[in-house]
Image (cartoon, rainbow, N blue to C red; front, side, top):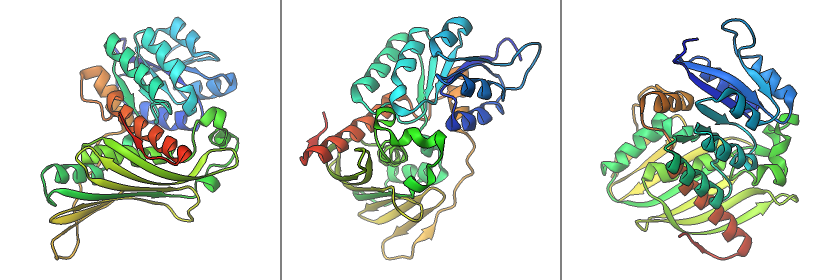
Length: 333
């Protein structure tokens, strides 16, 4: 591996880390130097997947991310821990002058998210967040068409995510998702976080008001959410998230004065006036969220989702939960 390679460490060595590591290993100019997890066996298993490039292990395993930072001094740290465990390694890495990639959500707590953003700004470090739905060609094109006024002034948005979240996340590696002391939230902060971020990013707006209701598991984790949201330009949004649906669905419908758009993970339909809806040709996806982060750190390319923007998603997540818990509408600051 060339000496100029970007040295990166990984914290949290479960399923998500294996997926991201697979992408990182396809990129030029990247050297994964260490893996850390309180379960040292998990860290060793992930480190063993990094191909050796010379004598000795390619990546070193640690039980504590602080030892990784101190002994290996990586230029960047990627965090794939459960949601509530994002904050401490993020702050420690920034104090060590590392750039950061954090799997979504940035945090389930607005104050912690703001702390990360503030420290990164003060240290001049880049923080990318794993909102890879921003790279979907369907949403990229929807955002472009909304920005150009293709369907006229936006008047209403409906956003829906439904999946059998309870049934699909089984096994020991997924058990943390159902422990409030580890996950910090149910499906909304997990899969639903993608829907919320896609909503805000595609419209180019932030939320100002929300009123929500939720059905929860006995543990307190949210399983179904319905919310009415107002965007900063006054556009109303309905948001629906279900973790007990027999079939998957992700869609955002944008209703303008002259037409409408319907975006899914793979398609975009446009209807103008009374004409039949047409399938919009889409470009091929050319970048992974991991490749985007490496390019941003190595060459100054723009981050797909900088932490400053992910903070708006965390604010809305927290406001939805607060509204559902209190039965009152919440005004976002």
